[in-house]
Length: 305
Image 1 (tube, rainbow, N blue to C red):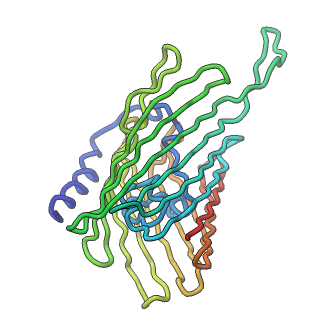
Image 2 (tube, rainbow, N blue to C red; image 1 turned 180 degrees about the horizontal axis):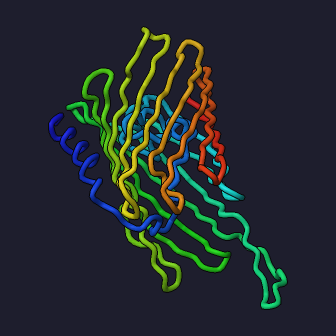
Image 3 (cartoon, rainbow, N blue to C red; image 1 turned 90 degrees about the horizontal axis):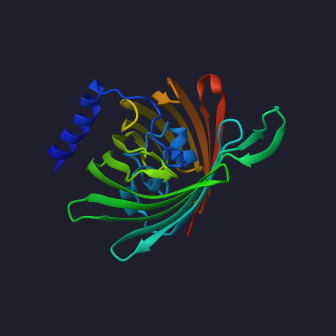
């Protein structure tokens, strides 16, 4: 099992160097944006950490770690007047853990002008609504498996609609006490169609690890994480992050870096964040650099029961 997982990880990390495609050629951009202030704080290097309800967005196998129900609210202020939001819940069900979540994307306002250059209307440029059903469980060999089933309803310019379905699958394996490796395939599904125009879904293959490099009893720890992402509309990209947690005081500090983030062109970007928890409630905040395009801000609230 270990040999198989390591072989798949290194194949993904190095084979993709020879691949190159046109950037941002897929549609359904709501499927490209992870909604989690914690994961954003570590540069979205989360496929090998994935130990809370945020696993839904990065590696659904990680939901199997949940022993009690969790409820999550997240909001991301995007570029210009775009925004993302989500509500998610996860709870033990039978031999595993079930999750149900709803995501929304508001693409801002679009001014419409007539032939004389006079503004005649203002429309919502894009509104996307995504419903996700998740399930994860542990196998007898310590391997965690999980999947998402997604339904997407999209509206462009308040006039054109598209509907499609997609699925994710993920696995997570603890190699030893302080090292976990993860693998996920995201957004496998058919094209989304608006009238006669079809756009590919943003299929992504990702692998990575979460390594607890330092632990001081049950007081604090430091985790280093690394992800490789291989999208169908770009080149292999890497994410790196570090999370320090003071378990005793309920404080977390995070730093992240994305190599080759796609924003219509290839640039690197960085992020940072903080988390505060009292055991039942946890508030996470992250800000993300988008180069010359400015900063994004995200906040999440997780409630444990």
